[in-house]
Image 1 (spheres, rainbow, N blue to C red):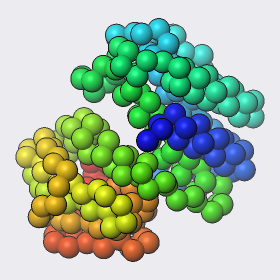
Image 2 (spheres, rainbow, N blue to C red):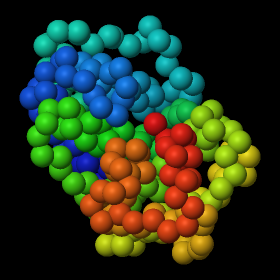
Image 3 (cartoon, rainbow, N blue to C red):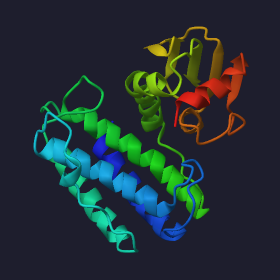
Image 4 (cartoon, rainbow, N blue to C red):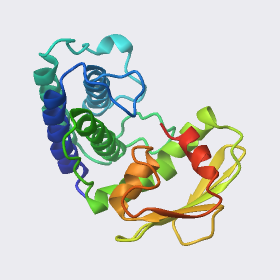
Length: 242
């Protein structure tokens, strides 16, 4: 899939929804956040990524390398400029070129192309939800890729911090697109395989709502999702994923 095209389209939707919501609107699934903070966070992440890729950095940028986004309504235009800059950088870089990332492996620019697409589309969902407008579905291919990234790249980092004692297995299954995973936690350390297998808890459904659920954005009762197995593990899943 074209991650940069996804980043551009989802970032544009995020900006439009943020403008509609207003800076002081609360962001439901990021406790304590307003839309202003959501834009500030996302803009900073995009700035950091741009530094890593444009400069081929092999260590994280220093905090003073960032320019803080404004706290008034000029933040909207500032965010749009940052979005345009990162899209230009990621669309022209060598995907195999070297750059630092937080995962401890896969130090290539394509990591950031994928990460930024999914970072921004999840926060686009947040902004549309905050604005009270109709929330766009995720593209099926992007939803499948986003679930895969969450399980195989981010989950080892998240679980080590948020639930280091978790020892259970979860089967996620897209019903309208190719995509099945079994993620097994042993003392907080997850291993994921991409195939059909029985887990302690199974969650099935269309790719878009399954992706939103996997990021704790919608309840398990949403849009044709269903479960099998130990439903008490839904709380354990929620304890790991932001």
